[in-house]
Image (cartoon, rainbow, N blue to C red; front, top):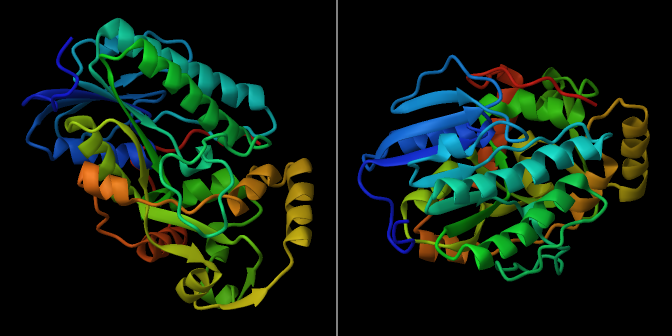
Length: 343
């Protein structure tokens, strides 16, 4: 196995799982534009018709297909494959996200891959201390009632063991905030709002008032900036965890400004009750527990990513959110149609 302290050699071969998603498509583009990268293998459950530079595709499901064969000869594996749905069947998401993630780690070892870049999340973090930024040492126990956070946190523990047992593998965990881009907007809305909120309804003239409830605060970044962090992590020397987000922190005032709306104080309880009822009636795909998790997320300090990865975002969080909203109105789509959303 190659020296794990060294960056990827010239002519590097990179494998990306979940390569056709919101972030995956941008990672493939970023890698294809890097002169150090000779080839990219994109793994996805459904092979796209998209033909980006230096890239070939293979159909693979991380829950049961042979992965080690795809990983042989790779200089790094970037593991992005994830499913958010169905929230009414947490066993299904656990099977894909956790058990599939463990299979990816096993295949990295079996194939002798020297570097793994894992997509963790701000959702892996335990509730934060108000608006005080936390660094990568903050506990990663997630919000236990939410499958997404529970699964991200569990994989953090799996990676702890993996690093102890496989010290020759350079492991990087990226913990991004909410990732947006124009082409993924309609898919993201469908994942979390289903048919309850059609894309055309998200227009400033139809939303003159924004409910400003306690805890309405999150961090965001553009998908191309997230991809740049993955590219730097895969090809460089860094190891460990990195928070990745752009400024400013998105709160009610920022959202109201982007929407050209007026922020009006609103109690969180009735909103949560309405979301819970809609989810139980299967009108809303997103679990109300995810709402609970979001309002308790910490604000992340991104200094380490800037100093050690050499990463800095080209787009601000306000721009990323504005592009997401513009994508809802314009109906742009990813290079492959998303898999159907189960509720």
